[in-house]
Structure formats: C-alpha cells, structure tokens
Length: 427
Image 1 (cartoon, rainbow, N blue to C red):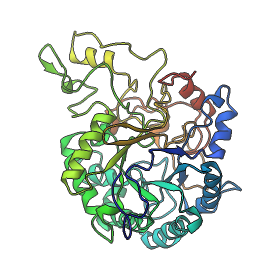
Image 2 (cartoon, rainbow, N blue to C red; image 1 turned 60 degrees about the horizontal axis):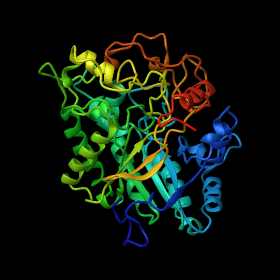
Image 3 (cartoon, rainbow, N blue to C red; image 1 turned 135 degrees about the horizontal axis):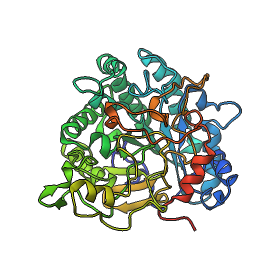
Image 4 (spheres, one colour; image 1 turned 90 degrees about the horizontal axis):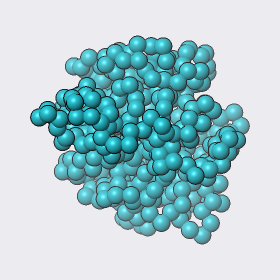
C-alpha cells in the first residue's frame, strides 16, 4: 500500500487486502453458481465495474453502487472487508479498441467529472461506509494507450492521438485520483497494462513518466496513489514456471524468440516488481503496492507444459516451455484455452498487495460479431475468431472463442472452459 489520502493518516492501512475478506458480488456469484461446478468458485471476490454513469444507480434493475456497499456492510460483519470497484468511463474510452468503447465523447471531460466521478465520490464518502476498505482500479487501458498508441508507432490510432492532444485521459485520471484519494478508506490503484504491452524498455520508461505526470498534476498527488494494477482483464501468466527471460539456447537469448520478441519480461510478477521499483524511483511512495489480475491467467488443463521445451532452437524452447498458450501475447479477447488463475490472495509476494479477480470470470470481453446495442459497445475484430490479425498481434489469428456476447455479458461456454483449465486446478 502507501499514500495517506486527504488530511492525515486516519485509519488507512498499508495494504487494504491484508486481514480482510473480499466482497462477493451477489450478481456475479449467482451466474457462477448456476453453472455446473460453479459453486466451487461462486464465493470468490470479484470487482464491480462502474462502466457507465447509469451503473452508479444500477442498470436494468441490477444493483447500483449503494446497493453493493450496503451488501458489503452485511458481508463485513465485525471484521474487515475490501470492496473492489473499477472506475471505467473516461471520455473517448478505449481509444485503441472497439469492444469496450464508452458512452462519453472525447470532449466530455466536464460530464465525466460532474456526472460520473462526483456522484461516486459522494457515495463513497458517506459515513456509513467508512468502515469498508474500498480499492479502486482507475481507468483500465487509458494511460497505457497514450504511451503506445498515440503517435509514432504502427499501432497509433486517430482516436488515441485525439485523447493525447486534448489531455482528457490525463485530466480525468488526475481528477479521479484527487477526488477519490481524499476519502480515507479509498485505496486507488492505477492501471498499468501488462508485460506484453509495456514490457519493452522503450515503452516502460515513457509509461513511468506518464504515470508520474498524471499523479502530480490537475490536483492529484502521489499520496492519492496506493499502488498500480497489472494484467487487468488480460491473460498474461503471473509466473512462467518453465523459462526465464535470461535463458539462452545455443548461445542465443530467448528474447529473440518470436514469442518474447525482445521483451524484458515474460510474465506479470517480474514485470510488476520491476515497474514498482521504477515508480518508486520516479517519486511514488516507497510503500507502493502492486495488484495482479489473476482471474483468467492460469493456463492449466491438458495443454499446459509440464517442463521446459526442447533445446533445438529459441523458438522451440520458448513455445514448448510457455504456459501462456495464446497464439500471440497481443491477443486479448475471450482467449480459447484460458483458465482461472490463482484465487484472490493477500500479500502473495514482496511488493505485491494482492492477486485479485478484477475481471469477473465468465463476463465476455466483446462480441465475436457485430451486435447492435444501446451500451456504446462496438465490434472489435480481435474478438472475431475468423480474423487474421493486424500489426498489434503480429498478423496472427485472434484465438478468440466463437459465439461470444457483448462485453460484460455472461458467456457460459467461456466460464466452463475457465473452470476446466483452472490452475491451480479446482477441487
């Protein structure tokens, strides 16, 4: 953890996950329990995604923020409990993908502040919720998109260039950090992509600078930041057990394999720890804590390698070793063969506040084909199993499951596969 928020330390703890139960979202739990074998994990804690203004009060008769917090108080009892909320409604949201486009236009920064962040802050600061520990995941994908997709690379998109030039991702994140960080029982974690996105030095250096800028401008301070989260809603393994980035085969570094592609990291924990060191060096609190989303990065099942690959070439070695069975590390949508990862765990390693399930397993990343909807969600070809890819994934097939529903909607077939391929395996 780290950071003291508004005025003084109050009862803020270093790591909100230690000694606390995790909030179980009854709506997700009901979906999970309704699946064959789902009761084995229906009591796990998952994050609540506030992905549009309407979600604050509840969509289509579903639970709103107050309803979740009231339920959290019931679950808390006399002990401590941490509730995880994903703050996800920036103007021009998800500028590099279409599956999770948002409701606010690129210039709607005032609306984001007054109609989204302000009402959330008003609810979270209600005295009746002061005994809850509230961990917020701040705007997945936004700042990483400014680093890699807003100019000068072959992954640049016009929408990301717009969001970089108008500054509204930065202004929005700073505002959220400032407003929510002033509430003593709120713990802000900024999204920091994953190793297969920012793990090259040429990306990681600028990312650290971007995070430091946003945490020290527009009213925000590093004291508003408890930590960072990696692998949000992604599939990168926490640890690759069979090979390391420092391995060589016949005198060649594994970094030159097609899979690693000169990255400095091959898994999330090594990336998170290195990123943490760089963030502290850049001025963040020395108590900074990292979260790793392990909801779908287990990669168990029959396809999981049991040991290192053959030493015939760097590619044979890496491809035979890696538990990440994606076709390419840039693939992100409803990945075939994925499994549940480590169950939510507090303080699993030095510098890591928790393994968390931020993406609720069983909720789709996006539809496999275009679906008309009133949720602002577009169709992204990376969710289409028949698509042959683009520069973002090395022109490889997407590896996405077929017949997927809109982002956030329940995807029963995926949930069953995640259970089947869980690692550690389910009982």
